[in-house]
Structure formats: structure tokens, C-alpha cells
Figure (cartoon, rainbow, N blue to C red):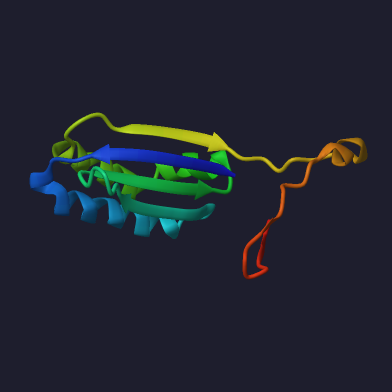
Length: 121
């Protein structure tokens, strides 16, 4: 799985337009094969920054996304709305495969028991 985190600082005079543009991109992207999630947030400490959090089944799915017409349309319009530096990072998440020897070394997290006897793992 590929996770993409991005931030887009926008000019507050065009904030509503920028949010709509990013939300449209997200809606279209969610329909793409291999898109597991595409979420849009506004930073609470910097509301001019639009955050996107994406999950893709594979790098191939993400690359196909970058070639889509709705990404092209987004890229045609967003530059006029940006104020600052856009940042993006992607991470590959792979399932850990443990041998029997490795499994013996895995340490369970401590349990915490609350006053009402609820146990948190």
C-alpha cells in the first residue's frame, strides 16, 4: 500500500474555490481503481493549508492516478490559488512477514487497566 500526505497552502482570498477544487479531485480519485482512501482536511492551526491523505493499493495505481484527466484539470487550476510551498511525501507500507524465530522476539505492548476495569491494549 502507498500512503501519500500532502499540504497545499492557499491564498485565503481563494480559499473556498481551492477547497472545492481539492474536494472535486478527491471525489473523482475515490472512484479510481486502486484508491483505498482519499481524504481532505483543513489544518486547525493553519486553516489556509489544505491537507490531503491518500491510500493506494500500489504504486501502479498511484501512477495511473497521476495520469488521469481529473488530476490534469486540478493541476491546470490550482497554481493560481496557491500561496506558499506545496509539500508532498509518499510512504510504502508492507506487511511484515515474521519467521517463527522472529515471532518469539515480538514484545506485546503493555496493558493498561483503568479505574472502571477497562483494559487498553
